[in-house]
Length: 102
Image 1 (tube, rainbow, N blue to C red):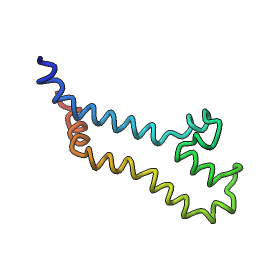
Image 2 (image 1 turned 180 degrees about the vertical axis):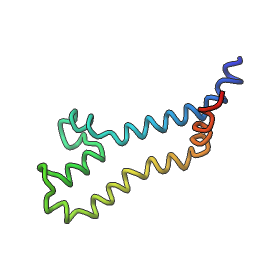
Image 3 (image 1 turned 120 degrees about the vertical axis):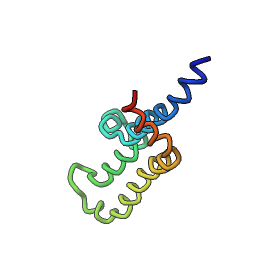
């Protein structure tokens, strides 16, 4: 009973912050998906943008033509994290503010 009435309401902001940080870490993952993905179909958005820009190891002339595509991809990569932050801003700030209190 104490767990439901005391601990859970106090741990809500902390759990939200941990979930946001975990999502951001997974969303921005680069090295692990780059090493483990066997086809371009499985690339994350950051690995896909990297392969578009640096196709064969050096900046290709095609990437200069696709600069707007790369910029649109970077906006698409930021939007989910931005929406989650806006939606859970209150819990995010509370979770960080409560971490230093005893």
